[in-house]
Structures are given as structure tokens and as C-alpha cells.
Length: 630
Image (cartoon, one colour):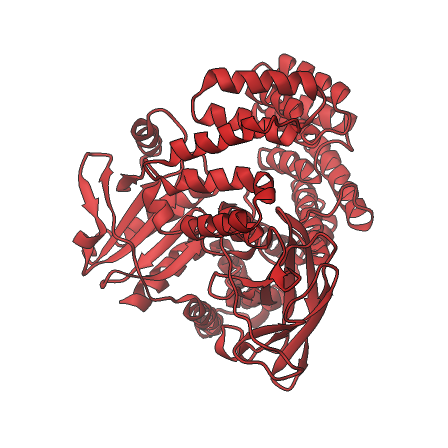
């Protein structure tokens, strides 16, 4: 089954550039009115992108994240331009404590050099309680997820302490995030500080489920089992139908291996929590079990019997796998049809609420993307059933809805165009895929065949193709130039799987490709066949060094865990063990896989997060980055 948009995200940061704003006169890049907005106020933002990566663009969108303890809402507005200044207006709420902003133009984003643009909410001339702590929470968690901001545990800690000193009454609201930051700081006194904070909370006789859960969870992390069990028991007695009880029953379901017992636990969960937070996930995991064990008959029966309960993505996931293996194609078609119908209905009348971290537009785009995937599965099954014209309609819509992002889908669409004799369409659409880096190797053969059909021979084909490949390279270089940085790379010294010490300082004079990964990370593993190609491409180049840093693992024997994975897959990688996660933290990694290209002087020149799913494109991109820093 093919993969979509790869990237697993973790932590983040933000702060501001502010200045007095008057209609079209601002100093610097960013300002707003009123200078000290109150809760419920409308805020007008002024933006001058001349000194940013958005300089010279013809449209700008403002995306604002309103926060309290966490994200309360995300709103998106197209900005209007007056002379050089772009403006937009949005409203805060009575509970807003601050706002984080980024500016977008298509795929390009200005997030203030990974710091975010920040606005505090004021009362009586001072930031409201929680303005700094809410910003610290963004630094600790959601800022990097949604604004791609840098991680900085020390800065987050400073902001928390500043707010707690000014407003001690808000501390418990943010205590979980504050303790998380301190555990990440890895200071010698972190555990004692956390225990002291927990004891202070205990002395207040906490009664809320949130506070009791915090105590249970943190005492578990600190390996204080008596205390952990004490609070678990209190929660179970006091909140038998609360979120903690939901989580415990879900965990029991998740770890159960026997499918019959899993089904029994699923029924128990649904009976006890008919609108529970994990209900959709439970149905997804049951469908996954049948799919992964290739019990497609039961997978089909389960999805037919429960068409409204799993996520709309799940129908694609099952139907696509069945199509890949030519398994029960008529049933696969039916599953894909259910997925298409449900996805269309979701776009018009969504069942759930908009996620707080997405704007209305982003939420709609996500639902459209899932419809595109279900149409992809439907189209693939139709091609297997030789219903090519029906497949073509579905695939054309799928390509549009997924914004050309799915390489395998694009290729199947082109293959189906070829099968149905749409030569002119191939000669139009494949060059566009190539120019935009959305092509696959299989498309090139189809393009050449279409060219010969149209022109009677392959004369001139190489020049025809070269134009588009040249345009693709120009676009790649242009996009990469926007991403170039020049920051000192933190030095490190780690041990590889063979017991050798490796430090970055020893590698000065070489270009270093540093890849942070984990064995549990699907996108990391999906990218490794491409990384293997890249390593092999530079195998005889002594000036380029690839290092794969294994981090964020939660297993007893991290060395054996990584070693077993590498040996099983026969990857020729030099793997370094970041067992304490100190190196990954020093590089402010917010999601894995993350790759850094470090030049010969020891400076970070590129950072790439995630994996698009296109192996050849990734190898080309890495090669281009290496050539640009040499």
C-alpha cells in the first residue's frame, strides 16, 4: 500500500517582533493594532514581507492560532495589500490569552525564522495571566506541530517561571507541560524538582480528574508505583466514566493480541463510552488487523457491517491493499465505493468538529484529500477489473484532490490514459508532473511512447524531455535556495553500533548528512530504501558522510533494538545511538525523519523534515543539496 504525507511531529517555540502600527506605516516586518489588545478585541495585523522569504509574492494568507492553555482555535484570512503593506483583521475571544501567527503563500511559509509572530493579550496594561505560559506550552508541544517552530526547553522553562511568579494561581493549569519541559532539560535535579511540584499539588487536596491523572501519570514516569497506584485507584472510583477510564480500557484493547478478545473489549468500550474519544480508532484498528493478517473476507464484512464507525481513510487503506494483491476485487470495489460515498458526505456535512489546530480551509482540504485517496482505491480496482473509462474519471478527480502529491496515483492515472489512448492528454500532463517534481520513472516510458505515437518517431524526444527536466531542476534549486540556512551545527560525540566513537568535529572538511530516525517511525522506515540509494551513490566519495542517529526510542535495550532492525533490513548505514536524546534535542528536531545537511565548515545548511513518499525525488533532492553546499 502506498504511503501519504510522511512526517511525525513533536515539539515547538515562538516569540515576537512588535512595533507601533499606523495604517500603512510599520517598522520592520510585523505589527498590529491595538498595541495592547484585550480579550474579545478585533486585531488588525500589518505585514511587510520585503525582508522575508515571501518577498515579491502576489498573495498572502494569515494563519492565527488563538491560545489559552493550549490551542483554542485556528483561523485563516486572506490579506489585502495597500502599497507595500499587507493587512488582515481577526477577532479574539473572551478566553484568548495570546495569538501565534504565520504567513503563507501557497507552499511557502514565513514563521519568523521558526520563532513565530506572537501577540499577547493584555488587561490593565499587562499581559493576562497565561500569556507567557501559553507561549511556553507552544514551545513545549504544539508550536512545532503546526507552526514549524524551533524547540527550546530552556526558553519555555523561563516563560513558565515568569508567568508563575506573576500569577501563581494559574500554575496548576500548565503544570503538566511545565513538568514535561523540566524532564526534557535533563538537569541533575529534574526528578527532585518534579517530585517537589507533585508534592505541592498533593498538599492542595486535588479533586479534578485532570490533576489526579497528572499525579498518576507522573508518579508512573518517576517509577514511584505506590503513589501511582494510589491515584489510579482514586480516579477509577471518582471518575468511572471519565477520560482516564477511557484511556485505560483503550490501552487494554490496544495491547490485546487475540482478535476475539479485542472484539469483546471493543464492545465493552462502546457500551461504556458510546461517544468515547477512542471509538473510531478502535474500529480502525480492528479493520487494520483483518487487513494486515490478510483476512480480507472478515475485513470486508466488518466494514460493511460498520460503514459509519471507522474513519473515512480506513476504507482506502483496506481497499487499496486488496487491490495491490488482487484479492476479492469485487468486494474491494464495494469497500472503495463506501469510502467514496462517506468521504463526499464528510465534505458536505462533516460528522465531527473542526480540529482546533486546523483552519476551516485546512480541515476542508484534509477531507478532500481523503476523498481523493478513496477515489484512487476505487480507480485502481476498476483498472484491475478492466473498467478503464470508469477508472479514468475517478483517477482524474483523485489526482486533483490530492494536489498531485501521490506519485503512485499520478503514475496509475498516466497508465490509464495510455490504455485508453489519450495521447494528447499524456503529452500535456506528464510534462507538468515532471516540471513540478511529481513524476515517477514509469511515467517517462509512457511519455516517450505517446511522443512517438504523435510524431511518428522518437526524433527530437530527448530535447523535448530535457526542457521539462531542466525546468524541474531549476524549480528544485529555486525552492532549496529559499530553505538554505547557515547556522553552526551543535557538536556531538556518540557511539555507533560497533562501539566506535563518532564526533561531528572529527568530520570537519566533509559534507555530513545527518538523519534522525526511530524504529517505530513509519515515515523513517519508508524513507530508508531511498536513503540506501543515496548512501550507495556517494559510497566512493570520501568527502560526503552519512550518519543515521537513532533517537526517541522507548525500549529497554536501545542498541539491540536498532541493531536488529538494521541487520534484518541489511541497510549499509552507520547508526549512532542517541540514547539520552541529548543530540536530537540540541538540533531542535520537531519531527522525524529529519535530515540535516552540514557543510565542510561544520554549519547546518539544510534541514528537511518528513518523507514525501517519492524515493527518487528524495535522492535527487539530497544530491542537489550536497552539491549546493560544496
